[in-house]
Length: 174
Image (cartoon, rainbow, N blue to C red; front, side, top):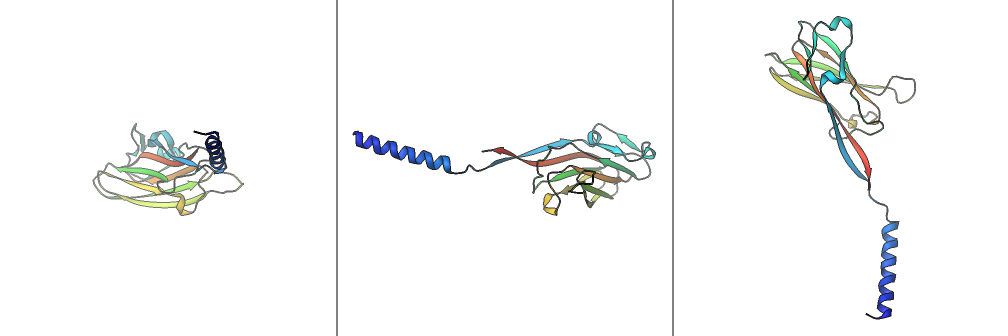
């Protein structure tokens, strides 16, 4: 190889390196799924409900004969947005034989006077006898995605919260 060829090769390598350095790197993201059983994130809302809600290892279960309210605030990664497709999921389990309607309200945000104020998103599910169902809140529903997710459910007799999953999209660089 001649010196001229080596010079051309060196110039091309330098030009290619400059182009690669000048090209912005595409951001890489990764879906992170955090999961927790109901017992870890939930508590009864009033002392009167203590006698009907059983904190089982696998579920926060209503074993009484009347409804009870439960509030849940699972941990999430601070400032990391919810995944648009998977969002936040609550798994409800029915230990009874009949279909039961369950109402839960997602509360996205934190208590305070600054923006964004909490957004309240009610959801309902019919949970079949000896079965389970899920409720999912997605950022596509118009709420801010980098603030805490909380929810409250009115648990009829036989219904429990067996799992909570938070799916967030983490920017891991390029």
